[in-house]
Image (tube, rainbow, N blue to C red):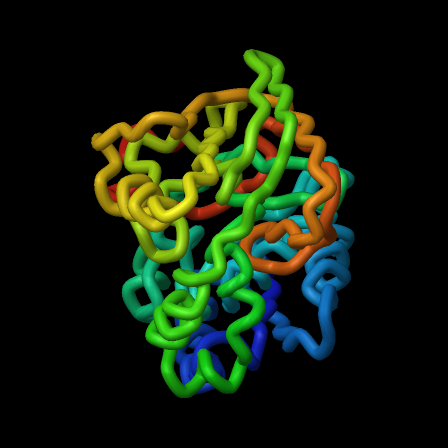
Length: 300
C-alpha cells in the first residue's frame, strides 16, 4: 500500500484543522494509503518531521499550516535526493503560496485536487538565511506577518493584518542598499525590496504572470520617496500596470544585496536576520500537488 505522512500546525490560522482529521484519514484510506500523523510542537519541528518522512520514503506528505509551516518543511529539501511530494492544505491567515498553487482552505475541495495527483516541481530559493518558497523581503509592511500576534490572527483573521498595516502606513523606512544580480546592478534608497517566486503576496495578486519553475525569481524595488511612499505602494500592489519613476521590476537567478539597515528580512512571512542578503535559485526542486485549473502556464 501507499504511505502518507500528515504534518500539521495546530496553531495555524484559527486552529480548526483538527476538525478535519477524520475526513482526511477516511479519504486517504479510500485512495489506498496507510498514514501516520504528526503535530508540530515547537519552531522548526516541521523540518525534522519532513526529513523523517523522506528517510521513510513515503509516497506523499500532507502539510497543513500557514506559509511559515511550508517554509519549515522545505528547509531540508536542497539536501534530500528524492524529496517526497507535498500536498499542501493551507490553514494560515494569508496563504499566499496556497493561492498561487490554486489551493484553498476548504479541506474537501483540496482533497479532490489531491486525487488528480498533478505533481509539479517548483523552484525554491536558497539564501544565506535559509530556503524560501515564494518571497524574501525587507521594508515597510514586511513585518506585519510576524509582528501580528497569534491571538490577533486567531480572533480577527486577515483583518488583523489590515489593522497592523494602518500603523505601518505612518512608519516608512529608508533602506540604503546596493544590489547586484546576474543580470544588472542597482543602488539607491528603497522603502521595500522583494524577491518573489509567487503570484500572491500579502493576499494581493501582485505577480499574475509568475512562472514558478523557470529558473528565475522576480525582483521588485520600490524607491523611498518622502511624502509619496504610500502612493508607490498603492501603485505596486493595486495598479500593477501603472508605472511610477524609480520602481524596478526585473528577473534574475542570483542576487547579492548589501545593506546595513536594522530592519529584519522576512522569508515566506517569517522573521529572519538583518544585514546583507544573498540568494540563488535551485530549479525544479520542490514537488507539490497543484490545482491544474488554477495554475495553467505557471508550472511547466
